[in-house]
Image (tube, rainbow, N blue to C red):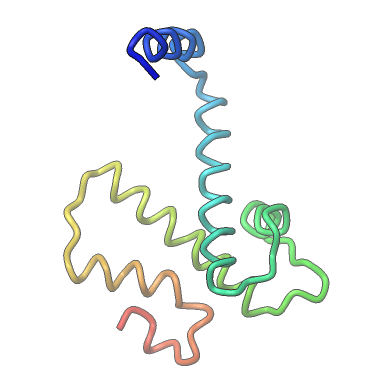
Length: 118
């Protein structure tokens, strides 16, 4: 790809800017669902993206889905929101923040709740 092609693509992309508030919110929603779903899938979770979205957005459970998977989905959703807020505030990472993220990811689904964040 040469610079003329890149410039043409950039001009085409610029036609869609600025995005509306609703468009940005839709992108952020999809990004969260995709992240939580793919993280669960990497760990062997069986939920699909639509089931993940239902749990995150409405708290609806899916028939025959293990409670642990639902709790992991809710935990990851909370952790995603926390990390997103950290990124917006440009908070530097330290051990305490990393432990807080781990706690959020595991608080409902850890074998021993007191180990969440350790």
